Image (cartoon, rainbow, N blue to C red):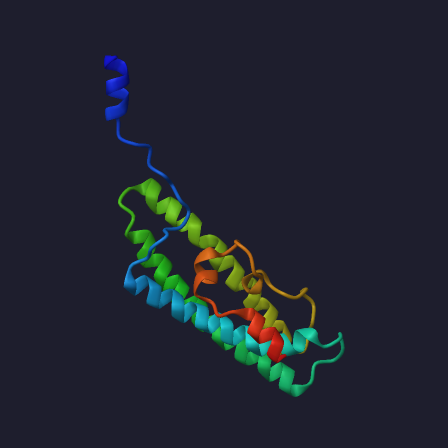
Length: 156
């Protein structure tokens, strides 16, 4: 009886959810800006991705350069956010966990940036879409603040 009472008094196990359900208002603003930059890059890259493989013309190269600019700005904001997010961790293990959480986002931005730069240079080597633009649960914080892509595909 005493053992069950003591067990019930134990602190509940801490859930280590990879991403919080609610973010502070400042964090939400940062993620909205990052998602907006991602959406702008997506809109620049989609028309060239649906065209059959051929030599990219000047307008498609310019779209790749614009997309690379948007992605660079989004990655810059994400790097600054990651630095603050990691520093906010109390313990070393929490800082390492937070750093690991953000690595997927940074690698997705690097992959999309390489795709946009290749398009800006007139190459078409990587398959479409880069992981940053895919739907699904791979990048949940970014997906939470992105616009509905079904409307984009209807326009194109």
